[in-house]
Amino acid sequence: MRGSLERCFVPAPIRHLGFSQARFDATACHQEYNPHLPQMGCICYKGAVFGSPTMTEREERTKHLEALRELGVDPYGTRFDGAGPIAPVVAAYSVETEGRQYTVAGRITALRSYGKAAFLDLRDATGKIQIYARKDDLGDTPWKTFQHVGIGDLLGVTGKLGKTKTGEITLFSTRFTLLTKALRPLPEKWHGLRDPEVRYRQRYLDLIANPKVRETFLRRSRLITTTRAFLEARGYVEVETPMMHAIPGGAAARPFVTHHNALDAKLFLRIALEIPLKKLLVGGFERVYEIGRVFRNEGIDANHNPEFTLLELYHAYGDLRTMMDLTEALVSHLAREATGGTRFPFGEREIGVEPPWPRRDYLELLREHAGVGPKDEDALRAKLRERKVETAGLSRVDLVDKVFSEYVEPHLQSATFVTGHPVEMAPLCKEDPSRPGQADRFEAYIAGMEIANAYTELNDPVEQRRRLVDQAGGDEMARAGRLDEDFLRALETGMPPAGGLGIGMDRLVMILTNSPTVREVILFPLLRDMGAAAEEES
RNA sequence: GAGGGCGUAGCUCAGAGGUAGAGCAACGGUCUUUUAAACCGUGGGCCGUGGGUUCAAUCCCCACCGCCCUCACCA
Image (cartoon, rainbow, N blue to C red; front, side, top):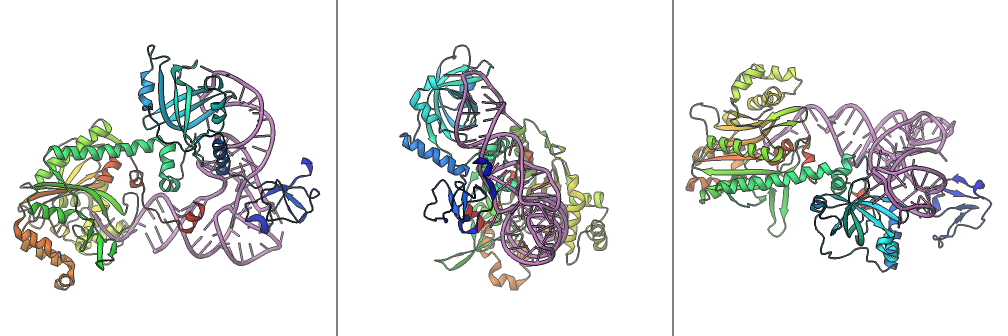
């Protein structure tokens, strides 16, 4: 019989039922295909006999789930008391604790079965422990249930702590509870999950399959917590300001636009935190900060995600020097927490963030690395053409900025403060009285990336209005409602002289977790919607 | 937005103008101390989607979709 089976195509009329290529025996059956009998062991179509429909792994697991229900076992258990974290159990092993009873819960990540006994690896948030399950220890009925337990399921286990003859600390189980049956398989145990698209779209799988990913996001979480503690300890008050703005301000990025139905009002997602925080400075919050998401409608690449986490803080009666001290202290503190020191690897390079950081003049760096000054437009264009950078339609300030990115930034590997940008590049920043035309601003660079930006804040309302009008393109734009009159009114009420600082937390986390792209430090980076394809698959 | 690369089984990857393979995972079996368990056996594929060339396309050509890289836009 088997010898007569051959492969064949599945005719279109039955392909939609899930039949794919199957074995058939042309002599065995001559019935017509009957669409009402899809459960039959064979399907006949014009003389051909097709095998059973293909059972996917999901369907196989569903069968186990049904079998469990028939055994009276709830495959989706409820509250499970008494389980402690796994890591301390493993750590607790000693001559004294040998044979002591423990209860743990976690996900089965490996299963090695020996007929009437099995080893499984059980993992929870803290670690992994080997479980030994033996028919004689569990009893006949539980053993039947155990036959339907597999990799990926969540399990609660009670057992005696001990060591196997190969020396591995193991919980010799006496009782187990199925907590959740997994219907989908886990990624492969050895190579894990590599496809970046699946890793980002189904981060839960990435987190299960790749322990390093989990470490990265745990570290991110701790860094944010530490940042808050650091600032609280210095008297900064955390606030939450609106994410939806009628006028997007505080940076020069394109915003996302949305609409409020009841108000019939156009709104923008915030591109910066600066404006409302400065209003709070006026209101008497003298040291204030916010850690929050901002949204910029720009391109996406290795260090830009459309939404990212920004820290901004303002310090009344301080200035740029205040912010330098604070930035050095915060970043080196975070580096010590994350890496144990202030020198650490980032990709191929080694990065240093030990204070004090070098303070370099923007124009000096420009001359040093590009050999040009900021006023010589032709020379700037020539430098950019050397690197095949398009220069058409760029203003002089744009040219300067581009030359800086192209020629200077790659040299700024260890933490460096760059100060004295052309004042046109920073409309919310005071001019440096000792360097006319240059802003009292710094940008801090690490690993060639800008990670912080700070000003001695402009608090002169007249000067501020002039600069915003300039930036908005003259009075016409101002009249069109682009000028934030309430911000100017706040400054007229009197904002204390202040230092202000912004830190791109995602980039800082990248550096401190040695992550090559921002997507590795954002749990769910923005990807294009898969639309129908994704819905169909479900 | 431009250029380049990639898309094959649940996962990691081979492959070649003649309708596809491996390892792991799955299913059946042997196995009561293994750890990438082993051994025997079985099933599993709209080869991203749609068109075109061809006797024949998963492979060649075109378009589209998605991801990655470089550039552009941009802190």
